[in-house]
Image (tube, rainbow, N blue to C red; front, top):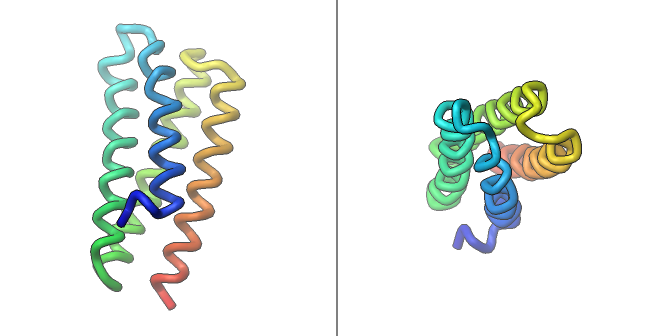
Length: 114
């Protein structure tokens, strides 16, 4: 079950931690930036579940899509920091979590390839 995957749990925890932060983005930017961050987080979680239920070639394609989504999350979090919508400490904590998830994802991709 996907809920037992450590990458799923870490990603779920990130989403729980990040949602209140997204809600503090100024209203004029929340509809675009905040919504896009939320959509990426949800897409990432649902893609982990889908990848876990598939095999080999299809799983690898989903995992590559997960990698792209993770990169997009990193960029939008950085943009949020640069626009001062999130603090440096929130940015640092988020990037630490994203990097940890990234390492798990790349390990998962490597095990799928072999």
